[in-house]
Image (cartoon, rainbow, N blue to C red; front, side):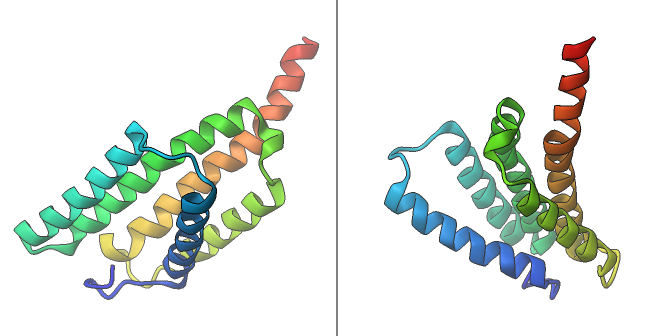
Length: 143
């Protein structure tokens, strides 16, 4: 995104949050690499390679957004199994920021729009899991 001059505040915040998460994971996380860790790292490297081979940063942007989407699935599964483990207010704030980021897209190019739209889709999925799933599950138990 830096190469395409499409860096936005949302991605800077995500980067800062990721740095904190990595630090905490290194200190408190389980040792070793999961298949998802390896696929994510491989996807990021593939994006960099494609960017350099084709001299187009869009390849790196698409690869990183694909990896971020893939990396969201363990969170979706965890939230589906036990929505009470997630902070609904925090996810609502994240979702609201994504709506604002999509509204603020300066130009409808892949470089400008893919990241905010990807984040919005991820947050929307979590909103559905956290707010709609419990209501649906309660209604099916009653019936």
